[in-house]
Image (cartoon, rainbow, N blue to C red; front, top):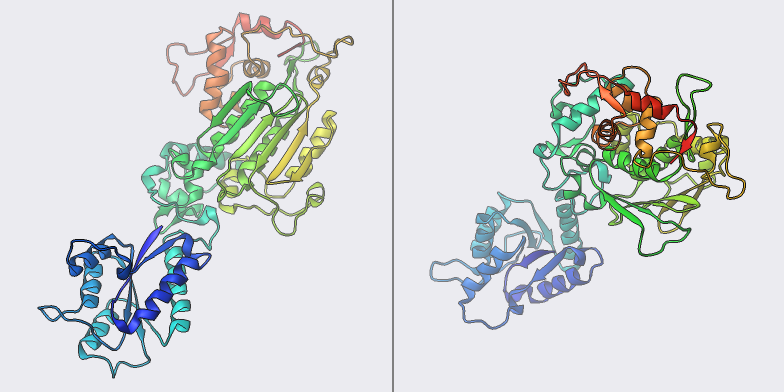
Length: 505
């Protein structure tokens, strides 16, 4: 809430000042941001009036001066309270809004004429005849003030400057990682060692040398310090309803790229994964009960197209019979729930966020995402996903746990309709997936591409390090773990695991 000091205690403006204060306190927009102060409303205190009103000027955010015909009471040095207030606001670098009554200044006190001339040399002033003129003029000035300070936006959220953020809040390492991917995937023109300022400028993520909200969300060191609601909340329920206590609940933070990877990994670690045999090929087949690309598409859509002005966060909820992804947002004009199931154009809610996600191959530009999800679910043997608008946008993907084993040529137990677990308990689904894609000596980049991950931290923490610790894979250069020519291969134990036969976690 910003404080407005309404200047002048002259009798000339007694009605206008009170009417203006009432207007600011009752207008539906202005009352949300501003609180007016009138000197007459100050309670009785043991302090000189001159000291009291100057203290109030120092405590205000905006000085609003009303200049009329009279100059007002002059102190021992011949200066009125109005001029003292204006000079104090100037010295303290307060925002000054000056309104002069009357169309000309000829009838005004000479000292008031001088004050108006002095003010006119410093700020743009507005003239008014009565309250009917004054209120719209003040309204326009305050709306301009809100827009200039990014408190009221007329530009999209992602294109707005991120308040209090500087280039130091953007990670050079994360930008370089993006450049490596974008150059390889989409032929992005900048070199991998391009400075952050050049990359952000190319992506239109700088506004007057300040990172935009999109820049901080995509490449920030601590994005949630500036946009706290950008986190993703993930929950796993054993039944089909939301019930407490929640068996597993995790709040993920990080850049939008990291949020996607973490949320996708959360889902894939909870749903069924089957690993088949090498009977028909050198590489054992694997299959999730839900295609990973469907999970990824639904989560990316929620994160990329959500309403970031909402205080809510994206929620990923896994139930026994379905996966629900909710985001605070809706559909853009021209799109309906029905049109999502048909070929349609791309209408990104946050275009400056969508562009880097496209360059890093997280999304496509063609508006084919929901159609692809439907086709892949049907081809996999799942019901079509459903889309709904409630207090936000909800994507529901239906589960069939037995499908994982069926897709690698296995069978379910007809008595229980469940897949019999045969995988060693300490081998997580992520490690099982990693082992299944390994063929010969492979680099970290090749392995990440094979399992469909782009975030190095997530890959190391959930795939690579656990597999190394379990003795299932090994480095080709064990003495130089950080060598750029480092490769990874199956150990004898890892080869034995992959040839055990079809299994499920």
